[in-house]
Length: 546
Image (cartoon, rainbow, N blue to C red; front, side, top):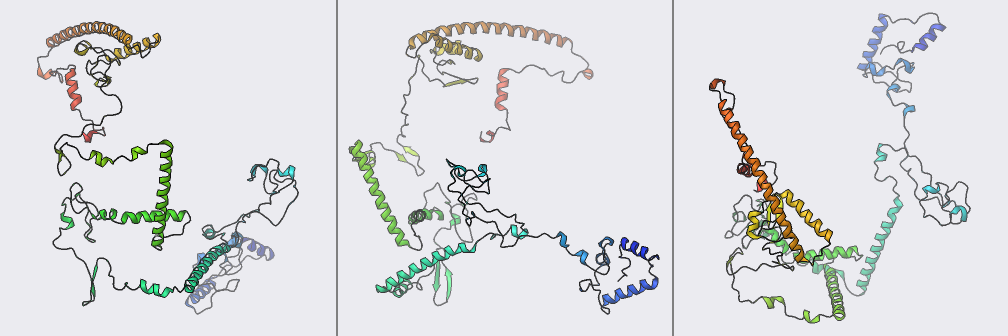
């Protein structure tokens, strides 16, 4: 190891220099050689190791950058104290037994209101706005009665990493005493019952013998024990039966597990077959009764009855029978009281509907899949509302015709609700734009409201609608004439433009502009309709269902 003169701080060097005017001596080559030999001898184990201030040996194999302390640490000899946790930086954590106190401090009983206490309950640890007690009509400040005890002033616990994650922090072991006492009471009750049975000459040994009498003779379900070979063989499928995986060869059908040889789903759900999958067994036989018994046991346990389906099945069955019997009695008494009060007992004594409606003279023949082969189908069940009631000479209902986002009557193509039917003449003559129809319909409604017509005066309403429809026809004819004139003028302009274009055609093909031979014109309504029909909308979510 190197000498300790280099580890001296600057202050000690300056102090020694002031006391002794001579400068500290530098190491000679001989001193460096001796220090190196000592270090190698310590590493080899021939020389004793260096000792720190506490008398502990320092491992000579520790590197120099670890063993040498910084100059500001102020060491006078070899040490490793600077590598250990410093005492001034250590955190003191709370003890395992320390925890927050619960409840209130009942050791002190206060009978008089104290200054600065809560005005509502009288406790010193909080103010009135932080009080969690019920607001009193007369507070403790003025009444001086029923002064609540003070809460505990909780400590600020400094928990370590493990203390913050301790599951049992703050647990009081005395709380488990109540659980032990409950078990002791149950054990005492069992001993008392056993003693009563022994006194009544009911020995439990005979019962245990009867229970274990046939246990050894019963085999496990699905196994076969051969006494000669002393081995257990699984029951295999009978070779004459059809294998489960051959009932439906479609890969998308029910899944067959080859390891357990089970097929839970029905392979042919649309066919009348003897095999419906292994899940079918879960809903046949006594499985439904078992599920009902389990539900009854859970409900009874929630209501405080100590019963279990597997531990006490006979007790549960008797309780369930008694419950169903009482339920039927209560139901019959309620039904009889309702019949006595309101009557109608004669309707309940009628024969059942299966006898009244089962026998008919209509012959209907069905296929294996439920389709009708011979005989008439069932009549359509109509609603309780009136049907096929048409108004204003119409032969169809409002909403049977649709065009351009508007509903109307199919018989006359009228878009005005409650209008008078014009028949075929209305289809040919009524070619009015839809915007004007909406506006005229609003005018009709405003006109009827202003005059105060009631729903009973249907004849007067019909006359007014006829007059307004005639006016609308006249307006439509005028608009048609204007549209025809406009179309004629456009055609004449288009002809003139074509003639001028034909005159200005360039004869030289090399100088002909791009797309000059293509005739550009506006598409007709039929072309646009065909385009919209054939156009594919890839962003439409219903596109794949069309």
